[in-house]
Length: 309
Image (cartoon, rainbow, N blue to C red; front, side, top):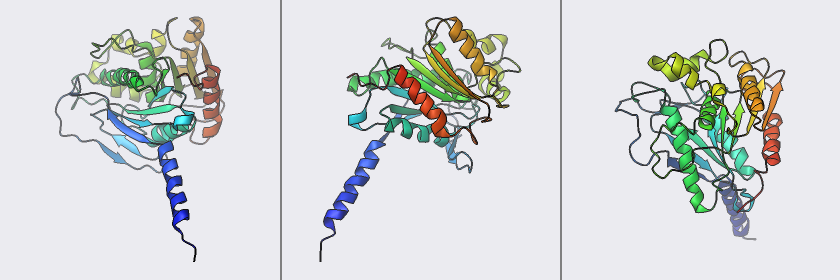
C-alpha cells in the first residue's frame, strides 16, 4: 500500500503557498496613545451583511490590515485602502479585505485602514479624527519602507464612497498636518484611486449623511470648504484615477466630475471612467473585474507595477 505522506505534504505546502500569498499582519496606526480621543465604554464590533459582507462599527482604535504579495511578485508599491460606509460604518470586506487580496495578487502591498468612525463619545473633535488617521497611516507606511519591501516614493491611497472622501483628504491636505510628525516624514501621497467618492460637501452635490456624520457640531462654512476636496486641488496634487456610475443617486457623479475638472485645470494627470449603469457601489454593474482591471491598467501606465528595488 502506497504511503499518503507525500500527497499530504504537497497539499500542506500548497496551503502554505495560498496563505503566504495573502499574508496578513495587523498593526496599530498609532504607537501609544491615540490623539484627539477620550475614554468611552463604547466597543468596536462587527456584524455580517448579506449584501456587502462584514461590517465594522464604532472604530475608536485605528489599525491597518496588511496584505502582502508573494516576494517574487512584489512591485514595492503600497496602497492604503479606505473602506466606505458614510462615516457611520466600514464595509471592511467588500471595500477592504476583498480588494486588498486582489491587489496583493497583482504584486501590490495593500493596507486596509480601519479608521476612526466619528463619534463625540470617544473623540474630542470628531471632524478631524479620520484625517489624523489617514495622515498617520501614510506616515507609518512610509516608515515601513525601511524594511526594503516598500518604495517610500510609491505610496498611494484608495477609497470607496466616504472612504473615497477620506482618501481624497489624504491626497490634498498633506500641507495641513493634523498629527505630530517630529520625523518630518512626507505626508504627500504619490497617487490616489477614488471609487464613487464623496468629494464635495456642498449642498446638493455631496452626501449629506457623510457630511453630518463627520462634521457633527463642528459644521461651519469653514469646515465645509476645508472638507470639500475639489476646492483643495492644486498643481502639486497627486495623479488620480476616478471611477463612478452615471446613475448613482446616493453620491452623484458630479463629485468625480468636479475632481476631474480641477485636476485637468491644474494639469495633474487624471483618468476618469463613468459607467452608464452601476448605481452606488457597483452592486449590480459593472463587474468587479471590469472596473478593477481599468484601475490596474492605469497603475501600469503610471509604472507602479514595475519592480524598483
